[in-house]
Length: 172
Image (cartoon, rainbow, N blue to C red):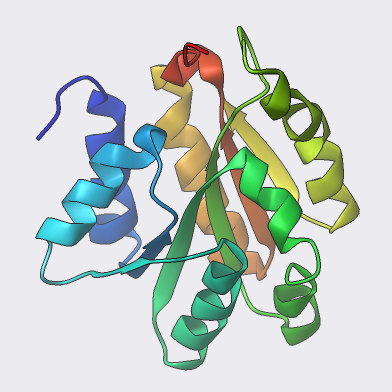
């Protein structure tokens, strides 16, 4: 297991051990590598690889209807794929949590990532999400804790944006 993201190990333990998350759906992403590897190695968690991000919204609905807690891991660029599906948790009044690794953020060198990176927070707010950010390792656990509480106690849609200051900008 990688040690370059120690905060990700702590976040995984918080979600699964403290908050009882049993389903983690994801679109493969280097920024979520530790979380994905941990989920794949954990027999108590259903790790579901998705072909597109909006499938994760439907997976969260199914998990909730089945009495389970879930989170969706994706890159911020995938938020644009999900706008229509983001109405599902709002209209179905079920909790929804997504952790998004940011692109088009601090230090981005890929011009194709800039439009969604600059728009994602406004898009999420327009979809009635609570938007939290973590730009340092010290901010990850408080943001994850707040997201789980807000979603699963108050039935809110919550997105935690994991910034490029935390993850590091990718070379282009």
